[in-house]
Image 1: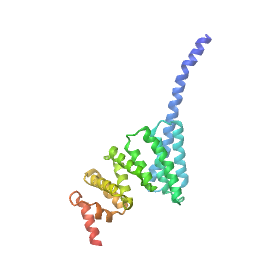
Image 2: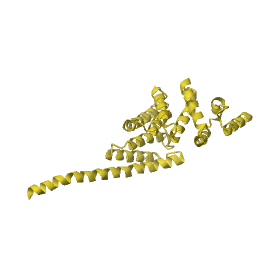
Image 3: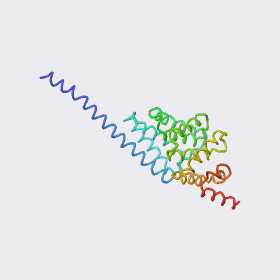
Image 4: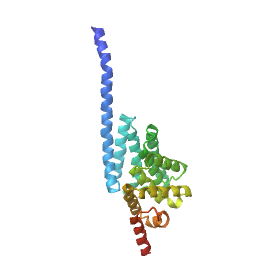
Length: 236
């Protein structure tokens, strides 16, 4: 009887472990959604309300990773949250060194996410966006750009990040990167589903002078883009 009791106990252990495993993963999802709630609010408002909010989002994501270190979404989220560190009015980034520390800290989980899921285009684009806001326009930046285009040229979020980065850093881009920016702009404006998104990016960055001077192709540019450039020329 004692042998049977021990045997039953041994057989039950794997089931208990499986239950605990499922519970941990479910709790990790709950924690990650707490962080995502903050991020959705920031996307809507364009700012992070307080430093405490950002710290809380980071902690929720770290809890999720602790409970489920095999989910690439959590690492991507953790890296992405570091982009938002630059949008806290009550705690601005005050030095180049501080900016680089934030970017480098966020780059690590993003790269971890990419290692786990190398064909996911948004992770590559989020890595590029983080390097962009930190001014890390280096060889790796170009590699990440190319990978983002290779995997996600059709993806709205990827297109937007690439065009934003290209317009923001146009002045310091080499000729190769400028050509890639033009290619992304033409790609977006030549498709009905992405044309308006390209226009919104230009509006948001107040980049019409650059667009009209450099990026507008008289053959490929839609009528509304030509009209905007004509209006700009008339105002000058």
